[in-house]
Length: 315
Image 1 (spheres, rainbow, N blue to C red):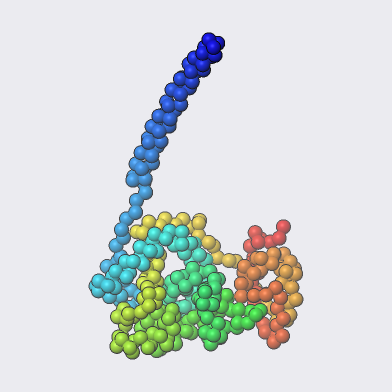
Image 2 (cartoon, rainbow, N blue to C red; image 1 turned 90 degrees about the vertical axis):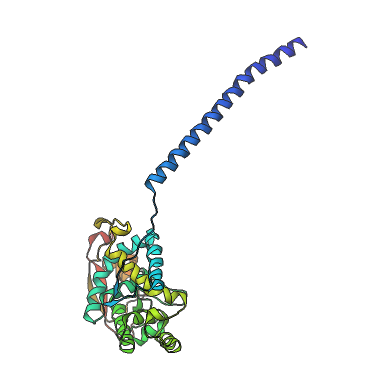
C-alpha cells in the first residue's frame, strides 16, 4: 500500500507542473490571439476603407444631357456607380477586355454614325465575352437569333455571326440607327436595345412620356442606361473611383492575318494543324465557327483569322 501511495504522490508531482505548463500555454495563446486580432483590426481600419461615392454633377449620354438635377434620376445613377465600382473583379475585367475590343468597335460605330458611348452598351451587355443569356441572346452584342437574322447575320448550325465581333457590331449599328429614326433620342434607343422597340414604344404611349428618364420601366430596363452611364463615368475617371490599371495588365489586340475559304472543310482540327496552331486557338480567333467542320454547300466566301503571333504556334 505504501508503495502504491508513494507512486501516486510521484505521479501527482509530475502532473501538477504539466497542468501549470498547459495553463500558461493556454493563457499565452489567448494573449497572443488577442494581440493578433487587435493588430489585424488596427491594420484593417487603417488600410481597408470603403467610401461612399459621389456621382458627377453633370453627365452626357451620346451628346444628350442627363437630367441629374432630378433627385430620382441622380439616385439611380448613384446606385449604378456604387454597384460597378465595388464589384471590383468584374470592373477590372471590363478595363482589361475593353483595351482589346474597343479599338475594334469604335471605328465601326464612327463609320456608321453611332455615338461612341454605345461601346459601353456592348460592354454591359456581354462584358465583351461570347456568352449566351438564359433567353438565348448570344455574342458580344447579345443578339437574339431572329433579330440577328433580321439585321443580316448568318446564323445556322455551322456559322453564327453573332459571335463575329466585326459583323455583329455592324448589325448592332443598323439596329441602333433604325431605333434612332423611330425615337430621335439616344437614351430611348439604348433602352430599346434592352427591352425591344415594341415595348418602349408602347410604354411611351401608355405613360404619355417623351423621355427615357420619365418612364417607369421594369427594373432591368430602368437600370440599363444608368449602368451604361456609370461604366462610362468610371472609365473616364478610373482613379477617382480607386482603379489603378497598369497598361501592362490590359489585354492586347489579337494580331492576325486572314485566309479566304469558299469550299468544304471536313476537319477544322486538320485545318488548324496545317496552319501550325491548335484547334482551340483556331476557335479562339474565330468563335463564329460553331462546328468542327464546314460543309459550305453554298460556296460562300468566309475570312478565317489566323494568329501571326508565334506564341500561339504549336511546338
